[in-house]
Image 1 (tube, rainbow, N blue to C red):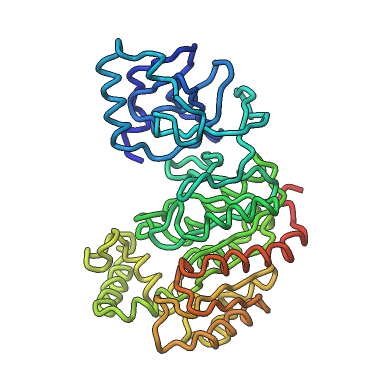
Image 2 (tube, one colour; image 1 turned 90 degrees about the horizontal axis):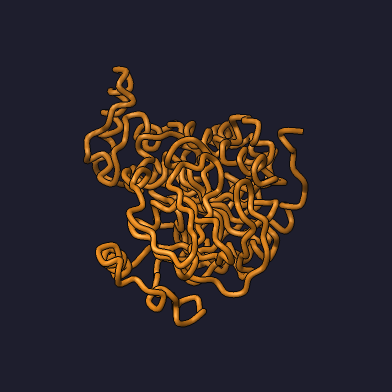
Length: 418
């Protein structure tokens, strides 16, 4: 989200009804966007509209990115208010794809839902969490004080699966999230995707410690605001390191974790070692850290994709760095020291046997066996021919996750506030 979005005013509002518009910070309250079919909002509809209320018969909409045609249409309406008429504003059909206002999709069947503080009772679609490909239906909310701390939850259940992405990931990070959201909905679990300081290009200036702190804030929010009865953590790639580090911290809310799923727990260090410049950059990072400049940025060639500090580069790429948890050359004792505390949590490791980020010299079967053993007997799932994100084995990934949650999820949790 661009920096100006938080303060940009709503330039004009055209409505056939009385509409109250607010462009204000809602703190930790979920942001509910309700647009009646006879309402046109100009400006940036995704950033400027914090809430629209105080009108009769509101209808829920699913929010997604506006098309360039929509943006030009809104600009035209702002310049020519006299041309705005009810015939133009009203959709000609009630089908989800027929609204001219393509930034919002009108829902179909609905049922009554109670909203939280300062909100009116609205109707919400009883359909599933996925509208169509790349469109999720759910609640977008703030879980912490920083602007990046935003999460999206599908379903309205007391148990949540929290997806923790890897480097460069954010919302909609893997192909299996859509079918997983649908499958979880059937089992009365919600799927939570969230952004943290390390999301997208922020990983280079963040750390496992910061990730753990923000993950704890999210779980705290779910317990206190959503009455959560326990969560399961689903880590993808470097997100697996976040799970291991978080469960080692003994934060209060870590007691609410029912289960942990590791999808593609691979070694960043072993992959980086296959690149030509890595050795010299590790030496430079170590030198900067020894000089007390660990939080200064490395040269651009260290990571062309994002700015990265000497500390984070060293953590990801050096032997025995903070992120070095799943390397094949670590001894059994070293793996046990890093992963042994996970034996107190129900764990599953989903390993892709054709993971492109695992060097060819690594014996994948032997590695996953050692990782499971170091975690005190984690469940092992080997997916033949699966790539790193399992985009070519989506059904197998979803089946493995759901089957594990059915068996391990109901085994209870420890309320950190009890």
